[in-house]
Amino acid sequence: MNTLFKIPAKLCMLMIISLTLGGCVATMKDQVLDTNSETQLQKRSYQTRAFDTPDKQKVLRAVISTLQDLGFIIDRADATLGSVSATKLDSYLLKITVTVRPRGEQMLVRANAQYNITPVEDPKPYQDFFSSLSKSLFLQAQNVD
Amino acid sequence: MTTSSHRKSFGSTASDPSTIHGTHDSTAMAAVHSKINTPKHVPNPVRRALLILPIALTGCATTVPPDAFTVTKALLDQRQLQSRRFNGITEESALVSSSNVLQDMGYNLENSEVSLGVLTANKQRDATDAGEIVGAVVLALLFGVRAPVSKSQSIRVSLVIQPAGSESVIPEFYAGAAVSSPIDAAKKAVKKMPKADSKAVIDVATKPGNYVVRVTFQRVVTRTDNSVYVETIGDAEIYQEFFDKLSKSVFIEAQQV
Picture 1: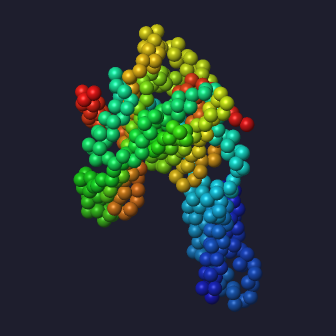
Picture 2: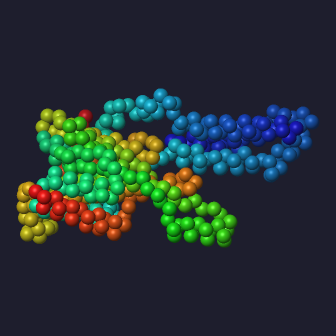
Picture 3: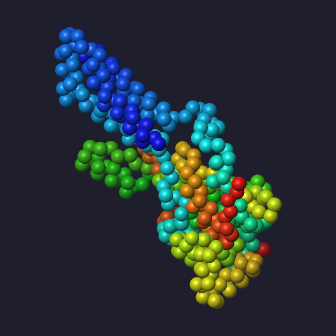
């Protein structure tokens, strides 16, 4: 009799676990392609800013020094690709890749970050980053449509 | 978003014993019913659910700390510690000197981009610390707890050379970070500076040969229980000694030319 009721108790625990985890655990496809939450367009809009300068080198240098000021170390940089990857270790792991590419007379700067093992999908950290970048560039960060 | 879903499932747990209660009402089950209703049995799923709740929450509700992308006072101090200015050198010779110094210190070069003045290197080393072991032994003797101690570490270093100039301006307006427009803040900061200083900044920026070298060390330490902790090294002595070595190396490099 006792065991008969222990089994439903365990079952209900399993149900709770699957219910709670089901809310946040994505499938492998979702994790590989990061397609579970927002659209590509949404993501691009808060991860991208335009700066009024044709000087790619200058923007790349500013990206590097801004990341350093924010406590990151530069993992790698490539002037041709216009990409900079950096890591911050502060009891957490924060990784960021920033790319700089020309668009007309402007430079488009795109950042995407990862906090421990989750993608950063909150626009606020990106705003903070672009605000710091615009300070060291002496240029206003413009939203891109 | 996640919180509400947890609450829902938590609510269903609490009501679970009552549903069992309702479906089985034969007399044979009566004894069991009373058992389930005793405080010893009923709160168990509830208690377990309460235990699961925080685990489930931390499992997916991860957000970036609010100051992760802002320049704090501590970061400005770090910047001071990690930067040195070298006058009358070429960027290339500074990079060559730096890579030599890093090699002297046993680092393996990992990545470099000369046109952006970036160099990264790493090494793996032992991380056993005498003081830490003594502490662990004392803990074990007093409380019978075996505390894990540092075992090995991976040390990474990134070094960036930038033309000197802007570095003396930036901290000024980071200090007034609350200002709405960064451009206004920047203009204000330049205005606030003494005339001679702002002129010096412009002179330095346009004159070739003056560079700021910024170096940062980070380490990932593995403990004896295979847990890992990460940190950016903030020890002033380490940076001081590194720059002493770099100065010598830059000097030697300059003599050869």
